Length: 303
Image 1 (cartoon, rainbow, N blue to C red):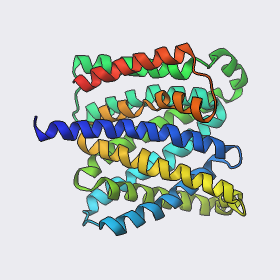
Image 2 (cartoon, one colour):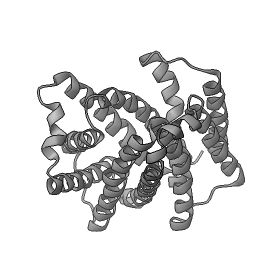
Image 3 (cartoon, rainbow, N blue to C red):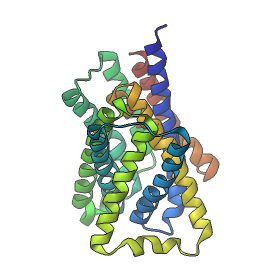
Image 4 (cartoon, rainbow, N blue to C red):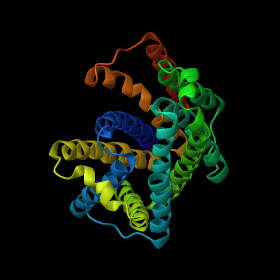
């Protein structure tokens, strides 16, 4: 077998590992979400991330990076983390977590695949296309089996249009952020690329908070609350070294379109984790959706 095959295999498993890490960090962040607002979590995530990734770089060594790569990765961080995550948090408030995640996990990868084809010249074979379809279909089943759309729309009728706007903008920002990260990581180590993205994202949030005078408000919930700090620190560690870093590794070795599809399987990992950690019941539709999604993944891998 050629070395390229092993790199592609490593990239694919990195994307799936990233999805699993996002599932675990989502559960941890959800526990913290009862105590602090979303922007506080995003700001804390970026702040802690800079120190953790910076410490790792001091140990592993810092490579010389071109100004072009630094700029591209920086814009990627601003789009994907500063704006993408913040807009997604706003969509969560308007639509609720189930509907926001359903739209984001199904429409998001499709937009990224289209952009990757247009901007990066990536192509998927016909079996790969079917694999994408079945993967997203399975993810949709897993997310939607406990979600009543009619009841949700009744509850969020006044916030539906703003919520759709927020989630649409979030999907676009995240997709463009992924495309830029794919370009930027080509000449940079995944660890250093992740650090640059977080650095720019933190600067963006800090400027935003300074202009609006909200930084103190974002940090206030953490004051004298060690259990909350411990929970956030654990969630951030999993999100950074599992979610972000592994995903950047996958972008380095496989197409952005394939990496995004594999990374969209987070809900499949949430099902067993929620059953173990949150004692949630595993339902038959969730199992069926997982089987369909896995079949789609096999087709994606086969191409």
